[in-house]
Image (cartoon, rainbow, N blue to C red; front, side):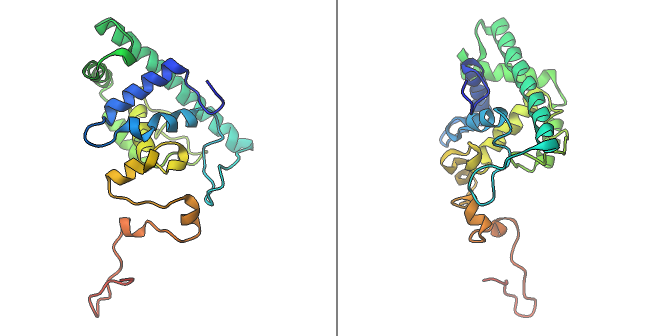
Amino acid sequence: MNDDAFFDDHQRRTIEAAMARIIPTDDRPGAREAGTIDFLDGYLAGIDRVYAKPDGSGFERLDGKRAAAWRQRIEAVRKTYLAGVEEMDRRSRARFGGAFAALSGEQQDAILTELEQAAPESAAELDQAQATAAWAPVEPAMQQTSAEVDLAFLPLLALHTRQGFYADPVYGGNRDRVGWQLIGFEGPTSLAETHAGRYTTRPFFAEEPIDWETGDRHGR
């Protein structure tokens, strides 16, 4: 494990394999191609990659209570993942005789389904987490909500897989912008472009206001 990662080789392969079943590769890129494991592994490595600077020059340095809150938060999430890897491997060996990462895709799906059935609240937890996190890579450091720290393993994994697939590439996922391309979002070339006002996401979220006298949309 290096300073920019948290998982050991086995843990990384296991989580990456599970992510690849959540957003599989078919005729379009999936979680593996988007590097969602890099997004998660870098996030769990410490507090150095929590908030990207808006000018694109790197990441903000956290200190004081803010840093302490994030360390506590990340430690809780780490424990959930380590326990999750152990549980997936335990179930995989009991049912198919091998570790999760060594199973076929269909067998991995069966193990993930077992985990989902064992925690029927997972779907509701994921819906709530997505609504709270709004697909962002992280949320305010002092806001210790159920969007992350209180989630069980499977909804936490699903949340981070989707975040890593769609978040700004500066956070390590969405490699080559494959997540954005999948939904037809061109995205800025960098955060600095947005910070400088050269790029806006407004056209993707709201229509331009209508001039009710002419029927035209402003800005067009």
